[in-house]
Image (cartoon, rainbow, N blue to C red):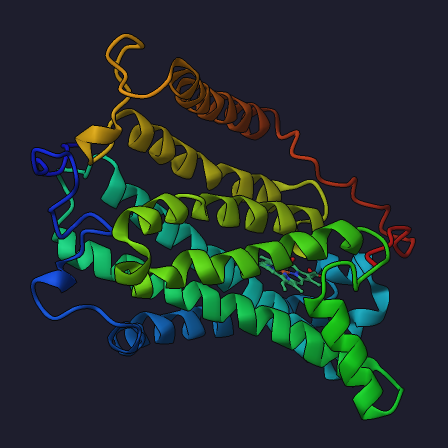
Length: 327
Ligand code: HEM
């Protein structure tokens, strides 16, 4: 890994590769419209990935090897529940795209790998387009879940539509079982992703510094997404290699986050000794504890992966239907 090029004397970024200091200022500003257009190629790739995941999930349901059917035996009716499976597939592509965009973001704001062939500008654009696509994929995931609720509701269409909207999009609207917590976690991720991602396009109005400070909290969106998945996804409901693999994939993110904190691209963000720290001692202690907390997370992730103790439920015996409630 090598650090990205030096910044201006003020410590503020003037490198186009650093988010918030984008090249747009010099070469035609990146607008939401231009970025939406640029999002098309990786959006198409995301759709292909979603289609492949859907095919796999659908096949597993039909073969009755899917844990979704063990958790909810009635879901074996693929004709009735295909939208649910499509929603699951969008959930996985959303999570994958969120993973990619977080990794790209951390590479931009932390030390850049020397082997990376992508220029800073290219990396930054890819970060923005994968972010936009992540939001679209999450929205598709939620909308298809709502569509399935409408389809399976025997009430009049307008009342079914109202119920589905409330259960999908209103925090607390889904009030039973694990979903009581898991659905609001997903909603919080979606509702935070929109402003924390899109404020980029109005950063000149709110001030680039405000934008940068706010955008940092986007890591919370990612944590909520992973938490929501591990808590509620029926394909990771039980113990097993796939659930452990989802945990394992969080290790590179945590490692890059630590590197970003310890060796930030912006020199002004580097944590120096308490005596030379420009802010208050309290601020210094908080920043240090943030870094130590990430070290703790890395150790915990290693513990989960090595022990296989990943919070999954125990697989029920083959001859009984599920005793789990996925409400
Ligand atoms: C309004 C927001 C959201 C709603 C209403 C929602 C709804 C759901 C539901 C009902 C499930 C259970 C599906 C199953 O039986 O497996 C689920 C699982 C899942 N969700 Fe979400 N979700 C939301 C946000 C998110 C976000 C932000 C992400 C990630 C970026 C995400 C990714 C996933 C994944 C990967 C699964 C696992 C699917 C599976 O096991 O096959 N969801 N979500």
